[in-house]
Image (cartoon, rainbow, N blue to C red; front, side, top):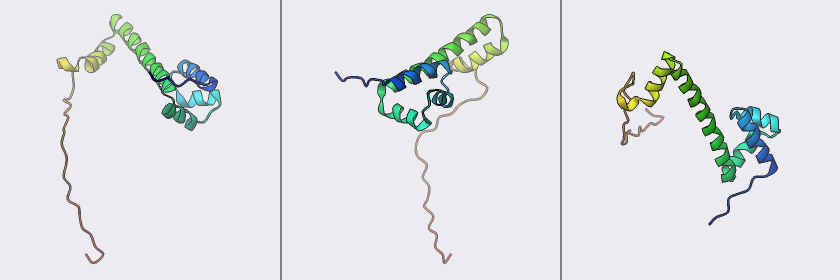
Length: 116
């Protein structure tokens, strides 16, 4: 079994502040006094850090979903419509049909010369 990379104290601080700042990278970098590139380096090199950042994002979505459900329970028609348009697509609650096209598109390579 492979050992998970550990977080240094700066990374631990970043994750804590990141969650408190609604997953805002710029504000968190400023508050913990690192540049944005350091954040991206940590994301690419430390799977533990990357997972914790992902978990913060998921927690923020969970929070928003909870607030949306509260609005629906309160009878908010707009919230209900939004929910059906996003979560109810499979049952036909869509305004437009999304089409997925697969395959390749062949483009002829144009030959240009200075003489033309």
